[in-house]
Amino acid sequence: MTFPRWRDLLPLAVAAVLAAPLAAAGGPPAAPAKAPGPPPEVPGAGQDIQAEPPPFTEGIFPCTQCHEKAGDPSPRQLAFHDEIQGGFHHGAPDRWCLECHDNGKRDYLHLINGKLVPFTRSYELCGQCHGDKYRDWKVGVHGKRTGMWNGKKTYYLCVNCHNPHNPRYKALEPEPPPIPPQEQGR
Amino acid sequence: MTDRNRLPVVQDPSGCAGPEGGASRRDFLRTAAAGAVIAAVSGCKPDAVVEELQRRHLTELSKERLQEMLGKLEKKWSAQYGKKVTVGARPPIPGVDFAYGLDLSRCIGCRRCVYACVKENNQSRKNPQIQWIRVLQMDKEHGVSLQHATPYYDPEKVPEPGHFYMPVQCQQCRHPPCTKVCPVKATWKDPDGIVVIDYDWCIGCRCCTAACPYGARKFNWAEPNLPAAEMNPVTDYLGNRPRPMGVVEKCTFCLQRSRDGRYPACVEICPVGARKFGNLLDPESEIRQVMDRKRVFVFKEELATEPQFYYFYAT
Image 1 (cartoon, each protein chain N blue to C red):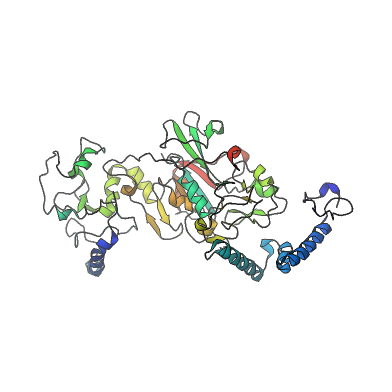
Image 2: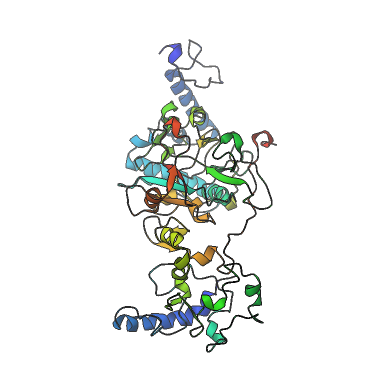
C-alpha cells in the first residue's frame, strides 16, 4: 500500500480550503450522514487530529471514481479487489466489505449505527470493537506519534500500522546485531 | 598532597616529573607550559592549547567564554566534516523532568532504534563500534532475567516465538552511581533529569562505566570512526557532538532534540510505537498517561538507582 501523492491531491486541498469558511459559517461540522460536504474529502485535512494520511493504494481513492452509486450488497466473490478479499483476515467469514465500507456513499466508512466516517477518521470505526486500544491511542499510550513532545504532533492512524483487512503486525527483518567485543578492532 | 591522595595522572613522558617521582599539580602545569612551547614550535596556536588546559568547568564558564568555545568547535568541525556544523549548549527547560516509557508488550526487537540513535548521535560506526541502545532478547519462560538474555540474536524475522525483547540504554537515574564515582565531575545530572557528560572534561578513567549497573556507558577505545557524509551536523556540546578517543559516552535522551521540544530519535523511528517520551510534571503527557494506566516497572529496582526510564506492559 502507498500514500496518494500530495501533488495529485492539491486541487482537492485548494477546494477544501475554499470550502472551509462555508462549512464554519454553517455552524458545527455537519454530520456526514446529512451533508458530507464537497466529496471526496481530502485525506488529512479539516479534522481535529493532525494525522498521517490513510495508506491508500495509489490511484484507488476516491472510490467514487468507479463506484458511482450503490451496488449489490450481497456477499459474493469479487472480480476486482480480489487481492483484498483473498487476504482478508479480520473476523472472516462473518464480515465482508460493506460491514465497514458504506454502500451508498462509497468514499466513506460507516459505524454500526450508520453514521458515516471519512477515511481520515477511521479510528472511530476501529474503536467500536477495540475500545481499550482506542482509549489508549487517544492519550498516546498505544500507537505512535512524531513531532514535538510538548507541541505539534503527527498521529499515526490505526491503519498506518495495521492493515485493516489483515491487522496483525507483520514480522520484520532485524537490523544487524552488535559486534562482540572480541571481534572488534580487527 | 600525600602519595595516597594523588589522582592517577599519566606520567610525563618527557621525564620531567617532580622530585618525588610522581606527578603533582605543579608538574601538570609545567607540562602544560611545555606543551604550549611545543605547540608554538610546531605551528599550533599556543594560546589555544593553554586556554584549553586552563579552562574552567562547564558550569562555571561565563556566557562569553562558552560561546567562544562553541564557536571554535563549530569552525573546527565544519572544516573537518565539510558541512555547516552547529554546536549548541541547550540549557534544561525549567519545569520539565523528562521520563521515558518502553512498552515491552510491543517491542519486536527489530533494532531500528539502535541505528537511528547511532545516526542521530554521531557514534563511532566500527572499530570501535559504539551503540547506546542494546536490545536484549529474553525468554518468555524466564521473564526479565539477564541470565537468559542475549543481544546477539540474528534470525531472519523478529519477533521470534517464545521470546520478548528489552532494549536497554541509559536509565537517567535519580541516584546515578556513575556521577558519584566520577573523580573530576565530568558527568552530572541536570535539573531536567538528563545525566550529561562533558567529553572535554572526561579523563577516561572509566569508573562510571564500571559503576553503571545497566551497561549504558560506552568508552571510545580508539579514535571514533564517523564518516563525514553520515555526520549529523546539528549537535549539542553535552549531546551528540563528535567525541575524541578516550572518553565515555551514553544516551542523553537526544538532548539536542528533546531540549528543543522534539521527540528523541528512537521514539520517532520505532515502527511499533513502543517508545514513549515526555514531561513527568505534565499530567497530560504521554509518559504520565502510561504511568497512570499501565503496569510499570524500573529495571534493577533493588539497586535504588530510581531510573527515569520506565518499562511497561500495555497489554
